[in-house]
Image (cartoon, rainbow over the protein chains, first blue to last red):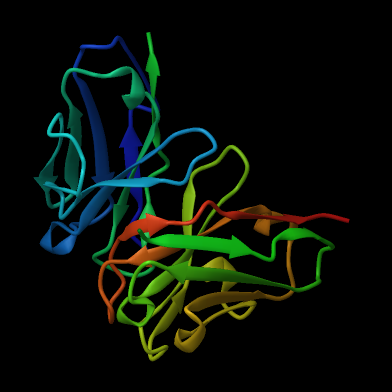
Amino acid sequence: EIVLTQSPGTLSLSPGERATLSCRASQSIISNYLAWYQQKPGQAPRLLIFGASSRATGIPDRFSGSGSGTDFTLTINRLEPEDFAVYYCQQYGYTPLTFGQGTKLEIK
Amino acid sequence: EVQLVESGGGLVQPGRSLRLSCAGSGFSFNDYAMHWVRQAPGKGLEWVAGISWNSGKTDYTDPVKGRFTISRDNAKNSLYLQMNSLRPEDTALYFCAKDVISLGFYYFDNWGQGTLVTVSS
């Protein structure tokens, strides 16, 4: 099973700043099969990024993904108030599909 | 608009069974693999099970193997999760999620709002 470790656990920033979230895999993920999701309280997760760097439909371009192998990053430029949420990475190179434990992005 | 609506959750005693359902609409249900993902209270996301478009491929996370069975009825645009021998650690919000492909298991572009399963005596 591929273990995904996200850091930091909590990130405190202000609107307008840049957020950098990390996801590290216990082994290399084939074909960069990594996705990112945003989840707000009481809501279902929302797909942001797939294939490590491709934005899902309707996702603003302030969200970007990068990385390969075992190290992946989600960057959110110019934070908006609605961006404060929990973010999860998920690998789909192997089953069982696995998620990271999440990074909570909170308002400073 | 894609819609996924889960049902069947509730309070159940340890060792008992429960069957969850998910009704899909707004897309061609039989063209996509489908999944169940759960989230324990205050915790992260955990993939539970997946099923290919034609039910030819299924897979499960280890903690539920032998106890849970995923199935689908494409004629009814419905996904199911039969949960037997339930344990307190199965307590979670169970989401139905749509895959982006038909045969393999990839990522999830649409999610339901979830149905809550509580296992307690």
